[in-house]
Image (cartoon, rainbow, N blue to C red):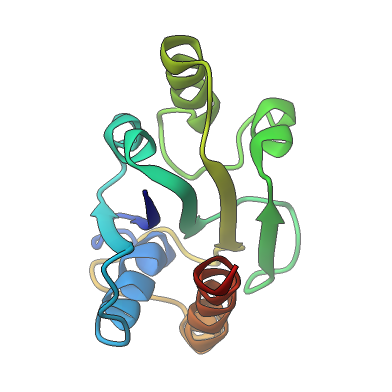
Length: 153
C-alpha cells in the first residue's frame, strides 16, 4: 500500500494552482517506493483509483475556510470534516460525493489528510498571490512531516 500525495489545482486560475506547485516541489525531494505523487486538475473522480491502492492520502489544495488569505489548514482524519462540510473545495465536484461513492463501493477509506491554504486570488493566468506563494515552503514541510510519520510508523 502507498502513501499518496495529491495536488489539486488549475494552473490557469491563480492560487488554485497551489496544490500542483506543492507536488512539483515534493517530487524533487522524494524517491521512495511507498510514496506516489499525483497532480489532478480539478477532477475528484480520479481519487477513486488512488484510494484503491493507498493507506494514506494527503490532499493539497486551495481551501475556502473563511480565514485570512494565506492561512494554512491541516486536517487529520479528514473524513469527519468532509462529511460535515458544505464545500471547502474551490472546485465544482464535491469531495464528499467521491468519498461517499468509494466508501459505498469498498466499505473502507484510506486515512485522509487535507493540507490547504486560504486563497487570495483564483483568477489570472500563471499568477499566484504573494501571500500564497510565500507559504508554499510551509505547505511542503507540512506534507513532509505527515509522510515521515507514516514511513517511520
